[in-house]
Length: 128
View 1 (cartoon, one colour):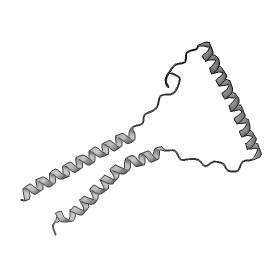
View 2 (cartoon, rainbow, N blue to C red):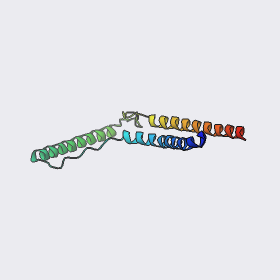
View 3 (cartoon, rainbow, N blue to C red):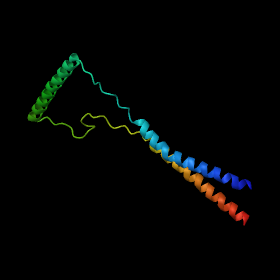
View 4 (cartoon, helix red, strand yellow):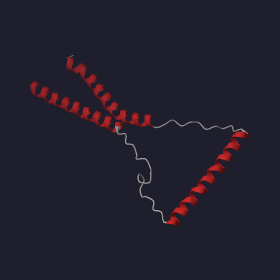
């Protein structure tokens, strides 16, 4: 048996592994970016329930006061800025590392496949 025939299954396995890795790297990066959920407390003591009710009541009072302030500002003709960032909202952070890794892996996979095809054509031309 020639050496070329024994290496063919190894090459196929290697290329299959590289292709699978190219597909799984962006997916694993996406899964790693999501936070793990924390379990909620199921047993509440009466003190916890009272604290929760107080917090809800305080939040409701705060919301009412905020709405009253907004209504007064609208009546006074105060002009609010339009748009998210102009209104004080933080700009979104773009993290494109998974996209870059996926693109680089795809480019390497494509270059490797092209090299493999060109070498096969050259070898076929020389053999026959």
